[in-house]
Length: 323
Image 1: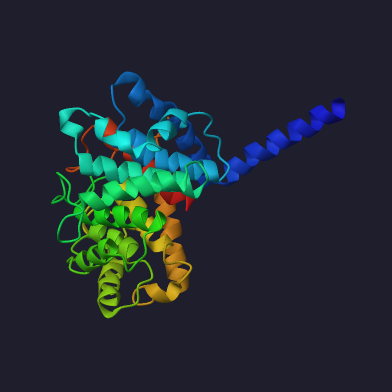
Image 2 (image 1 turned 90 degrees about the vertical axis):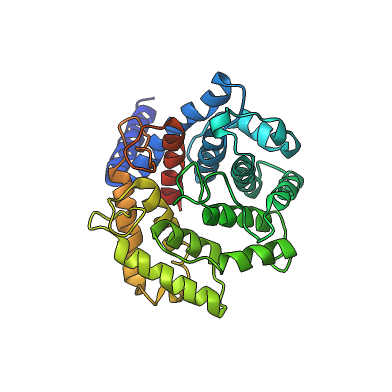
């Protein structure tokens, strides 16, 4: 018995020491604990499911759970809802949040992660893909009520929305030569990259595409990220603006997507520079976490209070740390 207690105590000490030595793991744990409490709250206190709690935040919890972090039963109700895309249209959000296309994109994104990790059936995602395809604009994009803005954690720009929708469609089994995907790719290649958020979303949308237009857009996007990273490690929405958590998380995700193929980033980063940019970006994210495990909401304009943006910002921050 004494040996068992000694072993248990030693394991606890090692766990505490390990957390102290790994600020990223500690930040993820705190963030997960925060979201496991917050995600179920929305439906319990409202008559609907939300993009921020049951979309962005659910996606982050699914990714964390797949990495071995304890999410308990926090997603049971959300998953039951996500696995019934036909009922999404019946979900009535408050008027100021009732953007049906955004909801479809966010719910489908969370469902795609659930399907990838065995928490949902492929047929569920195929049903969601039909809703996504129906919401596509004639020009190949997905446009939201706020699509002409820079884009924020819970209110995507058109480029973030189109990248996210395309990703879910591919996850559902839709092939790159499908007309829906071809149209999306054509629209993406017609975007002019003007700021950090666009640059990050563009890199994510292009993936490893090697056509001339993709190469040119990737080069322009990488240049913006290379010059836009602040000494603190973070990025703001524009190269000269103060860093914010969402903008940094999106940039980290974009650069991380190139790390396994550093040749794709060579126009702006040597391999070691790419790794360093990602690491310093993550350190910035960790440094901004609040004591309760959340991250301060990224808003447009900055420094406004928003529960929805706080939840979504926390979800994006976790995704950047988990990748």
